[in-house]
Image 1 (spheres, rainbow, N blue to C red):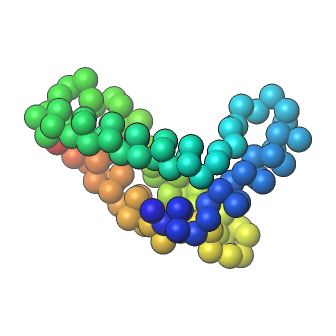
Image 2 (image 1 turned 90 degrees about the vertical axis):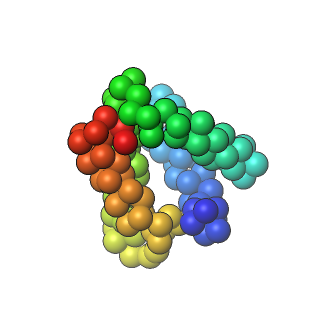
Length: 116
């Protein structure tokens, strides 16, 4: 939501295009708002569908949960680091601390009781 409200794609798409000029084989897509939002919605729906399995301690979710948590920590850190690096608040900066905290909680819960 934070990224959508603060025009994430206006920064992301030009950055990807600039990277492609320097590193042509880099497989980063550009998005329209509709496609990007549809991807976010589908991701949230997928996570909601996995929730009952997580609450029942499904062992097959342990590794995906760890990978997801680490990726979300890196994503949150990237938003914070980019804000300092560029000297302006980047889209996603306001929700990054919550994303990092929730991801750390997921890692700790996953370690203690399965995926719970």
